[in-house]
Length: 257
Image (cartoon, rainbow, N blue to C red):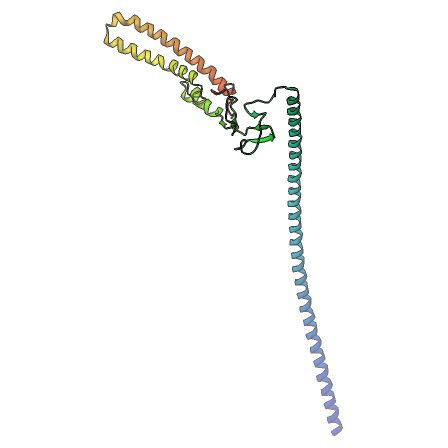
């Protein structure tokens, strides 16, 4: 009887041991699976970060390429400008040596001066030590005696002169361009027909209609002639303003539209 009890106890112990081993195996298998999932998530996160880093590198490389392209373009422009300055300097040296007059337009290039940032500014710049190039919309009056500042004359604009002449008329385009004589004469030609008509009408009403009719006809013919001259001149000047072939009162070209 005791022998059977011992055998039963031994069998029970072995059963308990095998049960614990199996449960331990299942627990280990679950832990390994969870670790594998965690490692997979970590790998995916690292892969996403690596892709983002690659994209950032591509953007940086593109930015560097654009910057290099701009730098190369700037170097080309600088080289072209330096070559142009060298040509100007050589031409200026030859002209000074042989006493040849400069071919540069003296209204936009001030030559034979001591050029620096104090007397050549506001958009103008020194091409070399003796030449100041006027900036956009600026000009230099050859008759100017001011040696402390060059290119201080503000040009008139073709667009404004054309629109004044087209829509206002009566010499307004010339007056804007400081062509006072042409503007006043054109204003007079434009206003005379109206004044003649008013004068003849008033005279016709106040005087004997039979005796004054011939005077009214003369005024009418004169008015038509003057108006014809005005319209013809207006059309010619309109074409000239459109082609920018009219300089202002100081013989400075208008700024093209």
